[in-house]
Image (cartoon, rainbow, N blue to C red; front, side):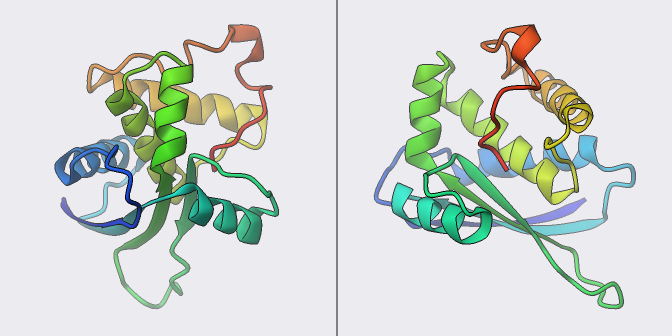
Length: 168
């Protein structure tokens, strides 16, 4: 698989993983999340501050708050053969805060956010509980393949798919 990940860092915050880690996490999600792994894939990962993610969250989701990751699948017409998957926008400050709150390592939480966002680009969602169960199970499997613990272990089982979801 030929993978092109354009990484844009537009925050002064230095708390973000190196490009090779982001590329490894994207590739793991693509390999596990696709029935037919594409020969080529391109996406952008944009690491931003709270101001930019809040503005985007308001503009595209109608929510006036910062969030951890937003996914924007590419809207390429069917007759145009381009390997574009879309864009991920990740707020480094939120990811770092969540890692502390959830008692996870920063890198493990970053991996989760990249995998989660990439799965959204592939069409996975978590609006309906049944879809959330499928997506979460796949995330857990992908992360476990990289020796990363279940990212949902801090959430009681009886609240897993009914908690408010900020990731999308």
